[in-house]
Length: 525
Image (cartoon, one colour):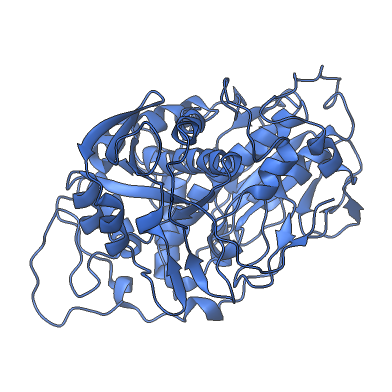
């Protein structure tokens, strides 16, 4: 970003000086400070630091442990093709030491993480069942058997590392350094949002293959667990979430050691780690800011993985099976390696079920009480047009129902005008034509009052969970859904009627795909 050259006037409690003051990514750390009690937060010094262009970023190699690579069994697509959408099979009866079917967990992992396709015309590849910024997929899965951990390598369809016993546990952790340095503090938000998406994708995969599971949020010994997973540079990683497909083992009291510090030349990452470690603290608990210190985390306890799927859904004319649904999920395609997305105009209104299906998927709460409570603090706003039976304009979503806030047929065009990547010769932008755009927002001050620092990342996880459901709802209706964070926040809040103390956590553009004529390479097994 460009540093300000002259004095500036603050337009709202959270604002930035200079021509890019409405940059939603740069505003992120200020919103965190505002939630923590700073009434007029100032941008950190590294806001103005020069960073390499994102396209020059080379992600680090996978954290591959020593040991053999065990292939995951093929046939996942055939099994998903035999499951009619939207029916969900009943859970299997659990056998001691793991799921009833020895391959059920392996197929669930493939259904969650394995690449579905490559699109040679797309600047970003590969494409998995869930969306990821720039297809970077910073969240990694490790699979444990009670003694050893193996890395899930989705592109190789393998579990790599020591261990031959039946897997009973999955650890999810995000690698901040997989994301370009240009994103600075926002790397933490992207990892938290994608963790929520992965939780829903994994919850769905486990559900489709009948594998019950238990979810445990990060705990104070998370850095030691990261070392067990093979990461000595724990500062690169978020504290792990654990999913047990057997009964959770007794709590292990790991010996705690100070974490190595993040590099001094990356001060924004040092703050990201502070925020991630401080999320262990609930409302009213003493600060553990300074991530090398460890505090108590009694409020993070295991809970059953609940359903990822709404209880009542209509059959889909576009995706008769679960395999079809996952295959058709995408974020909008452009021809000839152009960037962005484009939505065709709706010449006739879309059916009413377009919105009711989306609302049903949005209404499924996240699986852990901590995340479900945080999602209750999220305001969901839908900008609707060209959907039969629904007034064009701004709607607030409560309890699975869209309530009209303001009739406004011009709102979609107003949103496109506030989007950071407008229509250009090399970039598509179909927001003005999109039948549905959904925003997830919070009041950070209220979030901190209710949940302490834990509320910040919990809300991001919950929004990631919800937006992945919206992506699946769009696929069921033959549409695309593109999660985005590029709206200029102050202007966008004026369009959708949010207060100056609210921030947009995440949004998604749901559009009508255009045929590009480009190849789609099927990578399914």
